[in-house]
Length: 475
Image 1 (cartoon, rainbow, N blue to C red):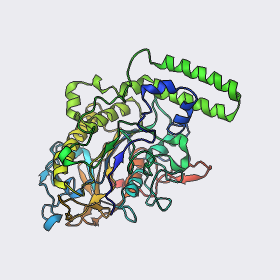
Image 2: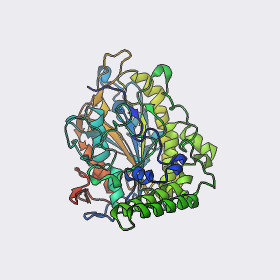
Image 3: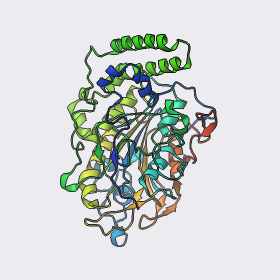
Image 4: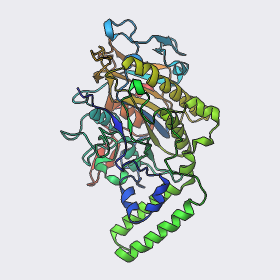
């Protein structure tokens, strides 16, 4: 069973794509940079169908490491031995639904979300990389054997599929992942499921970079470096100075375009592709909506405090600002859940409190702005944790994919319900099992896409967007 440290970073070696320093790269290297991270202006593929969902956008909260079902939304206070939940259940705003006592603010909003307590997957998914791929693509198996790192044979991430199916709005990309990539142990070892895979690099989601953070927390030095507080959600060196604006970027891009035509020839495919990537770069770097969305200091201090002055809180606040500005999908990565050791201390002190604070603030904020009906909020991770506590010192729970829980809110989801049931020790589904591919299909359904919707891969072949079927009774 894999227990290697989980690290999040970027294959661009800690250079954010929205770094102000990228202004100096608006030259021959910029199209190469954005060729791997750009958003394509593609028409919807054949096969999309009307949906019961009302979501125009989705915020996907991804708990890297695998959150424990029995210490979050599927409490087992009567389970025998170490299978018993370590914390007490509390009542919620919905009679008959209980969740963890360390999630009191979420408990008061249970009428807004649905809990799925019977999600599962199998095969080689006890490894983090396979679990990431399952949950971020909706496909039950990696398309190849061996190392589960990014490869153009991968199935595409949800954000990549949406990049092909949707048009960018107001100068924003269709999808973004923040605050960083998920990797095994550093740059060059990013896990499958986070980019466009066989769709081609032009559909890769934009990925932000806010540092190089270990996602297994050390309780004696917790949180891990950079986790406790960030100077701001703007990337390092990124400013809102007027002199670094769209006009300045446009002049630089026009100059490079002229040079490119002189060097290569105006009508060549290389120049046409290069010019397209320049235009996309200009949209991302120069759009006022992009700049403003990351400037969370514009928000009232009380609202920022409500979300929390930590990586998850700031990321959730940026996510709300991005969907409000017109983005379709924002994936927020929050790590630390791989609790093979220090499980009690880390869940109690480092993981559940910021989750309770940030997720409840996000739901409140979206509702207050009239955005919850049009914004799906999804919460998941690679898998759950074992029913039994292990023998590590200090002890923890290990990986468990046979059953885990997820949460959906907004976007047409009927809140105040529990779908599915696990057995008495949270080891296996008991009623209404939901494969992870069905969970992802439900996300697509909320956004208006039938499971039979097709995208076109880099070789011109149609491919289904997801292997599963949506859970229609949630709508």
